[in-house]
Image (tube, rainbow, N blue to C red; front, side, top):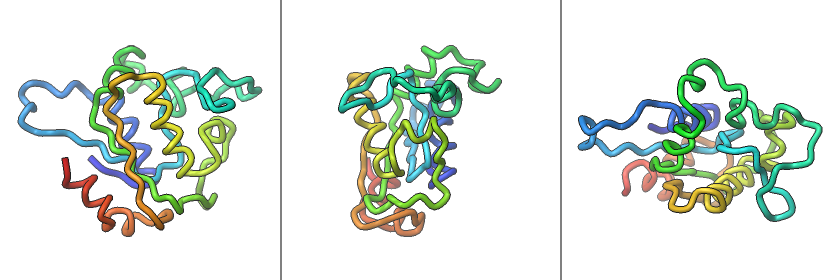
Length: 169
């Protein structure tokens, strides 16, 4: 499953909340390719603070609400326990495909909750992977950087890195 921009947000949340990949589907390898989204789903209240991950001192009360975090989830996501969502997302093959030139703010979510994830899409993607590294040992998220590409789905998908994300192991 792959999506770019808002589609990338959908893919990331779907990877977290979709049903278990049953033995009947074992022959099918699922990959979730999250490409240049505006924001990500964090599995806990920690965000990057002074080079580490901690609960931020912020007046932004809703920064950890759904769809930035697991508090106050919608009815679909709330059907699963938070621990189930954490376990599913951390063990699924999620490829964070980000263009290193996706640093402009056009159509970027600049709400308080989004800004706590980073200044732009490129920073937010890299920060999410560092968060997973810090909090979920052995997680299955993989950072894949596309050099010289901004917020262009065509350029992302047709890059060597994009093709590897789509068709590689």
